[in-house]
Structure formats: structure tokens, C-alpha cells
Length: 177
Image (cartoon, rainbow, N blue to C red; front, side, top):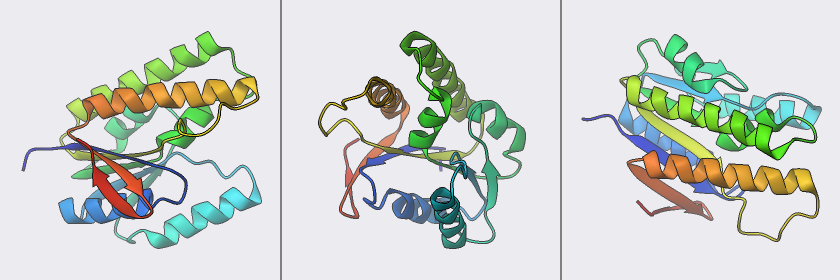
């Protein structure tokens, strides 16, 4: 089977991660799970711990907040599937505090270019998970607007690159590409 890039979008708690894990398990049992979340507070630590319990023990995990493409190339080993969960937190990691839009956009473009290059270079299937945050009201603060705009751009770039795109609605995957 030729390697595929699968992009999964949806709202919070829409079933994205569960669907991504199910797909990964069907593709191969040699999975590299790439986690972008950082345990910056107790609530996030608890979420990360729960996600770790939900994954098969045989999967290798790479916890990295940025430079995904380069780190995946370095650590992919014999993995036949790379599952990245999630792009949403990656973009948040790149923004930091009150960002300058042009600088944040430049950092994000370099990150996404590196990730796309990695999906082409590495001989494995890629499953990338992200939130769709553009369906709500316009955020009232500048940082939230910049975040929404940059995540939207990143989602577009990866959806264009992907062989398959799914949108999760209430736990149901809807194939859109």
C-alpha cells in the first residue's frame, strides 16, 4: 500500500483522536505517536496522562512542542505510521505570549513547510489531527484572533497536502477529500 497523508479536523471533543488512533491501528502496528501538548498546568497534565492510557502500549511516543518535521525524521525508526496529535497545540506552542503576527506567521510557515517536507521524505503513513476553530464568533482579543487565523492557514496547507481529509461531527467521521 502506498503511503498516505490523512488529515482529521473537528471541534473539541468531536472524536478526532479516537478516530485517528483507530485508523493508525488499521494501517500498521508500528506507530510513532507524536504528542505536541505540554503539561503546563494540572488540568493539562491529567489530559496527557489520560491520552497516554488510551493509546496501545506498543506504540512509541515522541513528545515535542515544535520542529516536528526534523524531530520525526530523526526518531521515526521503523514506524510505518506517524500520528501527530495535534496541530492545534503546535500552533499554540509557536505563538507564546502576545505575538507579533508577522513573526508568528513566519515561524508557523517554517514549521508547516518542515512538516510537509517530512511527510514526503519519510516512508510512513501520516495521520495529522487538528481542531477547526473558524466556525465560531470572532474572538475579542488580538492573540486569540491571530491564533485562529494562523491555525486556519495551517489547516488549509495540510488539507491541500493530504490524500484524505475527514471532518469529525459528534464522533462521526465525514470524508471530505
